[in-house]
Every structure is written in structure tokens, then in C-alpha cells.
Length: 158
Image (cartoon, rainbow, N blue to C red; front, side):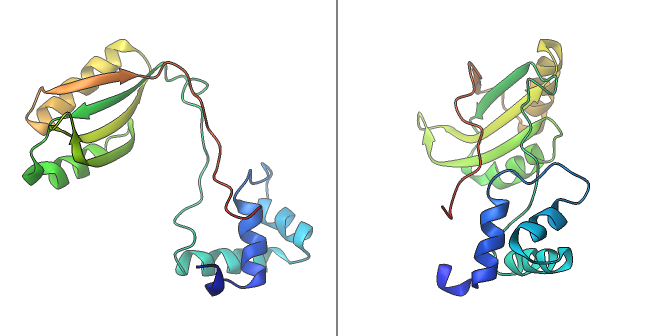
């Protein structure tokens, strides 16, 4: 993959893999650091997306700091024939930040993993009821977040 990237693309990727500056024009600031203008940085980012190096740019938010006190991994026993349908629907829910299919299934039956974030226990109960209705199963397990151990971006270019 690296052989398909230009030196300038690698320079911009290095800047994006950490914390993007929190300011009105972060790509101008990145450009200033690299000796590029803002338009060139934006063009390189588009090229990196086109090449598949970047899927998306987004903020990493701490759920508790944002007011979501119930953060739970819910694993669901969904038949293989319904995983795509149910997983796609779960993934559209506002409270679901991550939705994965697991193969092989956990304990031989839990095939869909969802990470959900709710403001309080009552909201979590309502969400579980909705997800039970969507999936057609009440066979799930809850794994509440006890403590966050890592919330950093990957570093691909040291």
C-alpha cells in the first residue's frame, strides 16, 4: 500500500492520524506546517480517500463526557440468514456506534455485536426493547463498559 502513496500523501496522512487541530481552518494549519496551501491539503485528502487509504474523517467523542452514562456492548443471537438484515437495521439506530457480525459466533450463537450509548438506564431499556422487536429475538447478553482503556487513533506512520 505504501508504494502506492506519494511522499506528499504520506506527509498529510501523518498529520491526520493524530489529533486534527481544533480550529476554524484545520487543513490550512496542517498545510502551513507542511509548506502546502489549504487547497493542496484538501486535494491530497481527496486522493487518499479515492485510493482507499482514508475511509472517513471524524471526531472521537468520549460517551460519558457527552452525557451517555449507559455504554454497553450487547451481543445478539441472530440466525446467520438474518444477520445482514438485522445488522444493517441496528447500524441505523442513533444509539449504536458499532455493529459487527462475529464469525465464529460467541458461545456458538451470538453473531451480532452492538456497542450502544444511552443517557440513562431507562433509555437503555427502551432501546433494548426496540432492538428485540427489530431482531425478533430476546436472546442477548449485556456487557456494560466498566472503564475505558484506550481511546486513541492508530499510528500508521511514525
